Amino acid sequence: MKPCLLLSGFIGRVGRKSMSSRVDFTMGFNTRGLASKKAHANGYRIYVLGDFSGRRDAEWSQRNIKRIDSDTFEQVMTQIRPTLDLDSGVTLHFESIEDFHPDAWFNKIRILADLLELKKALSNPKTAAQAAAKIQSFNQTDPNQNISPQTQQVDVETEADTLQRLLGKAPEPKTDKADTVERLIERVVSPYITKDVSSQYQALIDVIEKTVSQFLRTLLQRQDFKSLESLWRATEALVNEEYADEQCFFLVDISQAELMAAVNEGGSEFKQRLLAHVQLDDEGRDVLLVGDFSFAGSAEDAELLKFLSATAKACGGCFLGAAGQSLIDSAILGESKKDGDWTRYLSEINADSVVLAYPRYLLRLPYGFKRDPIETLAFEECSEVPAQSELLWGNPALLCARALIRMTQEDSADDAVLMSDVPVFSYTLDDEPVLQPGTETLLIEAQVNALLSKGITTLIGFRQRQGVQFPIITTLADR
Image (cartoon, rainbow, N blue to C red):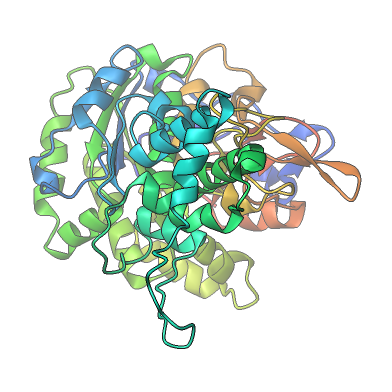
């Protein structure tokens, strides 16, 4: 068996003899036609591995492998029904990509619905006084109580504490009160109340909008929410790729932690199940195992990568994953990098069947007035100068799979690996416009060459135009 059946199809876009000057940042990429496309005439059989459901209510072995395409995407998503528990009695279910949008949450999360209803009442002259009186009541105390300031003990919960608890980031304090809008408003709005409530309608509306915005922002920044959204958005783009009809796509609902646990128990059940499914194909398609997984330099991750490499080789294909930042820093770009350590690492993981891509890429524009406004209220997801952690990044392995699909076509041009649909946006810094590139890390030429020399499939972003580009896609062994 060849080291990887894919090699004849994607090695050669950057010539081996030009490795010392791989990237020309002024004239574009030094690329040429593919060595052979006949091996991929039937398309790929692509298995996407990831935590699609977000649930732990069943063992991974009880979840069926799902075939999916652009026509059945929402149907399959409804069947899997990704779920996110907020640990405050609130559970979000996602049955379409639109369900990840904040506008879809206001009918699903009672706190948000009640706050918007209160805002609506404050905005209506006929109901504003009643709504303001309701808020005013939160700040009233029993005049018959005689509690001295010295002996009074108050369990104060700040706005941030309330939001963190409701979103599952902090334990709920012991209390007999339920998580209702009254409680949230009591904590957040009451400091703004004056005796003359009628003059504070707009101020109260502003406070409600601020509270809702902070709730949305906190939810969007949860790592489990981001993981679900990024995986499903990247998968949607994959099955809607231009030549997707010539491929077969399957979803394997298993998280990286679950797969690691299975590997620690031998991994035979997963491997045999996947092999049996691959053998159902009678058209001779090459196999891509695309993992929504990121690999650090740890021994545990190396063991998982070794298992996935062996599994991919047994299936007659390659495994695609992401090189984590710690692996890049320690083994390739860091000051302590050693060629001997990297060579040893590659030998341990059977590198001839592994493609590791880096860095991550931007999946969508941040919500906000200038870029992607939401309909319900004025909302800004990010700071004026966005932090990297505020943006939604995707695993480059899924983008790499899209590029491979394009590169198998007879009419593919040299820009087949230019992914022009990856968004970029601008912001202002020191009164100057700055373009946020489509990659999480903007690499300089020396870094690109260092990564390519180690076999890392490198994704390059730009400061002056939209999109991202792969100069070459190759296994770790071909360096």
